[in-house]
Length: 343
Image 1 (cartoon, rainbow, N blue to C red):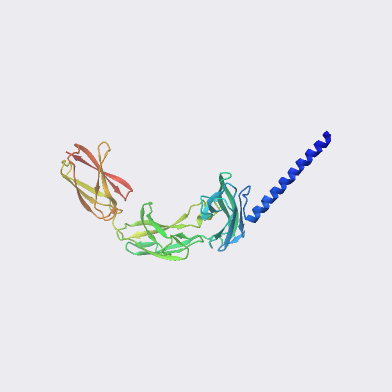
Image 2 (tube, helix red, strand yellow):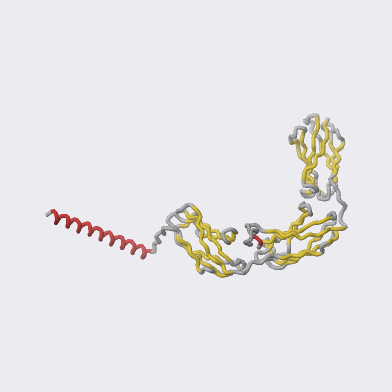
């Protein structure tokens, strides 16, 4: 009788298991009919097509886990140089499977690209690779003429950009590294980068002193080199030129009168800036190095090039003693000190 009961219990248990299997199968079938997407155990991302041609469109197929992924994904060349971002969804996290199209720019060069997306199931970014079949890497070339130019005359800069273009803005420095000015190459109006061959003119100001100068061309292609210089930053090429028949070198000169000056009286400040100019404000400190005031030198811009005469009335509240006026001198890229006494 005991054997019969045991057999009967096993039959009941087997029946329960069969019923559970049927219920699970029915749930899965209903889910499929209802279009419900069950979360994956791990994040998967595929690319179609892969490889993809530069200039073509590629679909990014994302299947998140239950915890979701970040709303943005980021694309890097060889997982080291940022290229672009991809907007995946409208919420702070993406939970549903999705397909996003990415238009591959025509100037993306041959190589592996990495798509980085944050996976909240593991709380870290995951990397997925695809390959772009694009053009070869090319670098910029440039020429400057003439190499010796009169102050007041024009220089001609010709640039053939590499595949990644060059910066539209061209800074100019003295040979010692002191910044002088910059000018824009005539590229597309709304772009900071030039991709097509371009020629620009720069007229050397008549007040530039004789000496060596250089222009810097920022080549955005260099950072893609794999020989150690491709560290993710653009590289600059220097084109040197010499200015002749320019202005005579001139140093900053400041005369303060009267000195000493009485409290409540006006201090006359006669300034002759150096060739590189001075900053448009002067600053006064007491003998202990405490800041007292600033004096507007009435320059047309933040920088003064022409001789100036400015008056400043010494406050009656200032104590008797020595003071220092500081004026920033662009000839030396430093402050110059001019002492005076208050009585």
